[in-house]
Image 1 (cartoon, rainbow, N blue to C red):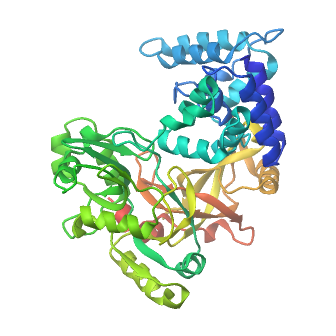
Image 2: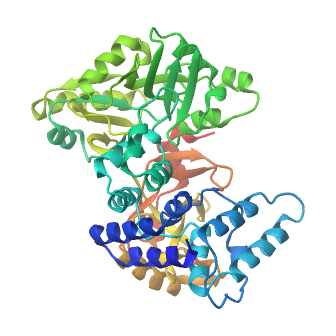
Image 3: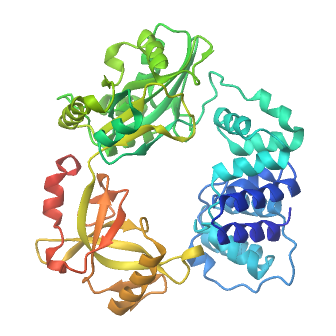
Length: 512
């Protein structure tokens, strides 16, 4: 498949808001694609590189290269060139990246160059979500959409299913089954504003602790244990204590869903950053395990003794979990019958927060396990933290945000009357907000560095965030987790913005 065709469809998908039209466009594209094209086409449509980060940024991409006169690049050729780029390292690597990018861009037309720039900078935002791609794939191959969704769930990869479907037709779906040793994407939760709202929506439900740890899926087949993250990475070698815990359970073959959390001597959870740092450590595992031990906390069972439990109601899966896993290794929770018992759910939330956890997840008792999906039958509730911060700078956007000041640099007041940067965000902004802030920030600009503008610290913005984590990149030693814009506060002066001191006092777990 030629890259120009993919770029054309990407643009058409970006230009329409109708899901039915997006599905039709993708179905047509998949019919034209060869099976070996699909593992490249699908991530490109979603704005992802199969290779991950390859070390190419705007400094390399900003060098102008005359475009090709006509389209000749295929998606597989582009993939091969990007893989070559990803292997570049060592002395002279920057010059070699410039050369290889120049060759790639020189073989691309002007439209293809725009698509490649957006792809390489992570700014392809055309709305081709995986769910729409599943529907397009089903339409292109004549397969049942529900069957395709389940196959993707069990394979853990839309690309794998797509290649099989295009090569073999709908019959290929039969091979994708829940198998111990092969991870599936976990079920995720939507958000609710309060426990009362969640209980009112779900009726009879379980209210469980929301742990601020690392999601894991633990597979055991006899004496073999494999541990996978929510992105399906194998981290078995990093967590020997979790493997030991799984081998200590009564069952011989199972798949369990849960989190690993590091607890302090007082029994309270350590910061997310400490747990994440431990799980991310690949060297001297025995030493770091002694310094920051982690414990598995399980909350679901997907398979037990070779029996697929995904379609069972949560209440029945929990019975299987309780039969297999001792209480000390299961998440704490309580069951309520519905809105009449919302008070009990609220008390459980308060108790959970007092124990140092970040909130609760409310789960419908009759819900199946929707692997890889953000199911409406799981609702997470946690306190929303907000801050009034000052915009210090903003970066120019790319893709659909080209020409707009998008990524905000956020600062809190310091004791000496200045501002300390706490992080960046481009989330939570409507098109109208982007247009307004671009005009306002250009008025406040004191420096235009090409990448964006530095501004007078006068504009106050209200930010929601999930918490803090330590970071040596920022002057206060901390950064915001999952920051997003709520609204601008032109009614507030920068002197009324929140202070670093107050922020640290509100989050002692993120302090030194």
